[in-house]
Length: 68
Image (cartoon, rainbow, N blue to C red; front, top):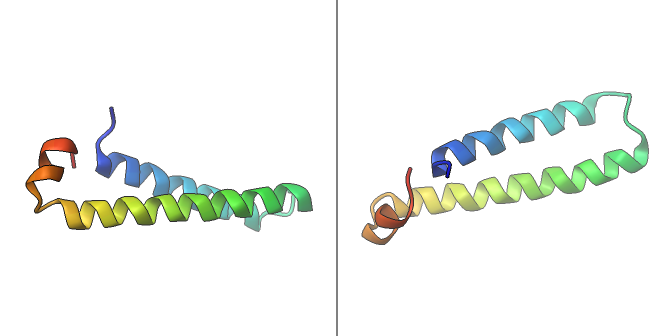
């Protein structure tokens, strides 16, 4: 199992990759719409994990449950 930090870093890379793909001109409009939805979900997931990481580092419950 990946650490929370590694998962957040993976999401950061995925967000950058999707943003890069969206700026290219080889995608069709239908694919771009789907990728915008995926980008939104990736950003939301990263935001949620960032919040968990920020609030959980000092919490005994999170320290015993998550590997940062």
